[in-house]
Length: 242
Image (tube, one colour):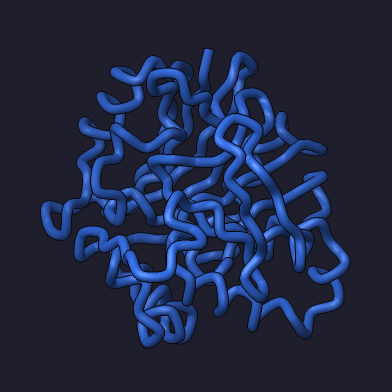
């Protein structure tokens, strides 16, 4: 991956970050030895080695029952949304095992692709999938561990954000930095218009959101040009930062 054996330092707090084997850990707890940060059950579930292993080996395939068109079709839909961002930087937030990150990287449509997740084991699974794929290894794909509520990117540095079947894992989607600025911290949604593409299941179980809730969330966070495509319990929607 692009950030293998690399290190960074924050200009504001002087905190150093370095890659852990195959991914760069940019969480605020990076480097701690005794402290462990535990997230809600929906987040912790996907940090499990077992869930990370089975995600592309049966787990994700079950989404078809809810109306998901399948990874290939979902990827093609995403590429249509992201045409204005071609040649730029794409961040796949809550990428899981990198199912779509790998597709974005192999497409050659972007100068850089960042596969980002909070789960260490999901990122390890992502690396297991790409380590023998020369087409991906030669691409500018970076594996990064970060918290969706504290994304470590300066304003204006990202051209497109993708989050597939991810909102239900976030403790509070309205606090996710892909939806807007919070205080002094600049988010990946800067002054330019960035495409935001997210897919999720619409159901009353497991903290899933309704169509109305998703649109209201985007509107309340100041996003514009909201659009959606719905198929059974599947929704793909996009919005832009003005």
